[in-house]
Length: 371
Image (cartoon, rainbow, N blue to C red; front, side):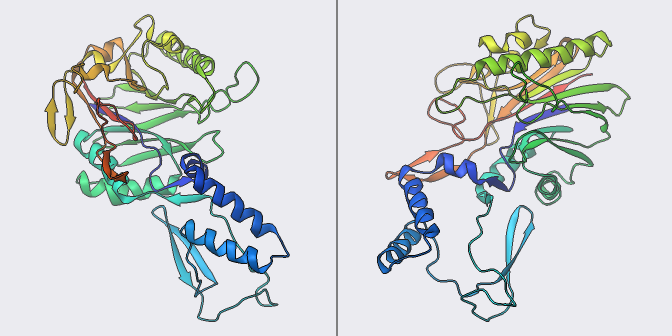
């Protein structure tokens, strides 16, 4: 039984809030100035000229030859269909509105999606658990059009669950080769000490039955990430404590197959993960890792001579209960390999940084369990 997990960080499109967080200071200033000028109903010639300059700097097209369009989403992409060649410059009785619409998402580059697909194809799992999936339709297209051709057939069963995130991000599980999803329990209703949502994206609990009839419980987690100037270690500890209560409940029910996977937002020796890792009730996958697979080649050490099990700033985990952990036959980690655009005359490799850390995209973790 091979299980893999990955924080996929969206399949086809991301919310614009990600773009604004990563935009350069100049671009943010241009956008703010453009929006301010756009709201002014009495624009002068000088202001209109400045708007044209800003539109050029932000990459907008200087002319719109087809002002009326139909947008349709397919495979996470927006497809545009003109509604005729007539050029309309103002609102009429036939067309009651004419103006700007701000899209809530932007498409991801194909090279990033290809790198993620390659990682999943290398692992070739029976059960795939994903975090930060944008919606059900994207998951369906991703499974059919991208994973299917790479894996000689798409996953037979899959489930997407949307949580509390206002961008729609949620969790997903996909199974094949006779593994069946028979149970699902959300935890989006959990509250923290202040009465707010405990889990930003829910923390779903899946029940999977193996072809031999054994029952496996998988908890997909995505703990709170630190902000630019904010430390959420206290929130992560609350989340870890709550997940531990789920595991204790399962152990009391004599459930032996328990997996907790996802992005926990902290290194393994951090205090906030002590409820999960402190007493070894759940075992971390790197205890077994002795190699890393990069572009199909095995590497015994990272460039800083550390074992791959302890790569720097590790935030992604595949934890398992003792009966499962002792039955691990082999395991590994795949880092997505993407060549970024040139910056300052140099190329930066986002799959691995100089010290072997996943620079932009989280890795995929996998393990073969004898259950």
